[in-house]
Amino acid sequence: MEHFLSQHGFDICLLSETFLNSGQAFRLANYVCHRTDRPTTGGGTAILVRRGIVHHSMPIPSLTHLEATAIQVTLAGRPVLILAAYLSPSRPLIGADLTACFGGGLPVLMAGVLNAKHVDWNSRLNTRRGKILREYADGNYCLIFGADSPTTNPYNPLVIPDVLEIVITKNLSFPVYLTSCSSLSSDHLPVLIDTSFRSSFLTPPDRPHFRHRLGQLPNSGGRTNSARCGIAQRCGYRHMRREILRRRSESSGSVNSQASPA
Image 1: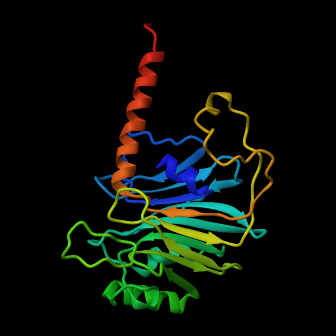
Image 2: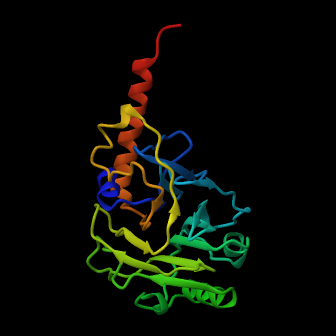
């Protein structure tokens, strides 16, 4: 996953179904992680932000079924709320959850898996949840985007590939462009979201102990702006899960090696 992020030069990465819990650490070099873990098994969302990008975590009013993590960044000279979202297929989509995310007055970009299909965002068919989301978007001035090609590649050959990963925006002053790619080992493909905006970017601090690991990352020294922002949504759950467990093991080993007897 770390190679995938550096290869594509992402500034922001949105993740759904992280399967993290409060006792697990998840860190990637050169990225700040904001996460919302489900109290029970499964689910969860997270946002990775490249170090140096001016941003802060944003609280979301109480959600009933939707899971989400939010940050605020400055894009095109305006504050924008960016959310990673996930809604389990076993939970209903309700307007109150959507209003909690889109009703705060800020421009919004949400990306995730809401398990809501509609031909308007390039799914094969319309589901009941997709119709509910379509109706909400129409009544609340939201736009919904889906990739032009399927974002799922099911392991079961009897299941037809479809578009599940979507982007929902409100009051953005710039367009968004979606592309699914076949990177990472998952039945859900990463979705790349390109925009034409410029974001506030400070020069990252000098961290010598990171130099070797950051050597393959795009050089950001001296940058004051990021010309483009890429967002990878659901970057391969199975690949990410292995990365999380590896990072947790490394973290535990590091703590144990540094501990000294009392």
